[in-house]
Image (cartoon, rainbow, N blue to C red; front, side, top):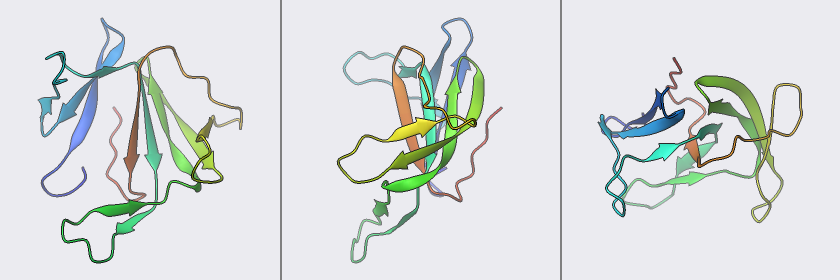
Length: 123
């Protein structure tokens, strides 16, 4: 949930072995294909954020450099991960609970950035 009016999520499709994206309580449709958006992998990153000073639309500044925690979700399972990005132009690196570089399953990956105090429910 991003605010009192905006929420999103994913539901696992065990037959297709991927996740269908939900937005505002309905499956999110790709405007180009008219099909439900699906992802093989979902990465949730907890990232510090704060309102952009003077922005009248309430947009947030996301601090995506540094390090933090998150989840890697794939094949109906999840695991806690850490992430690290030393500078703005560097690729974000993901690590499993043993400190090893995370290897993603082949397929589309959706990266969901959320506030550290976000209400995340994984079932």
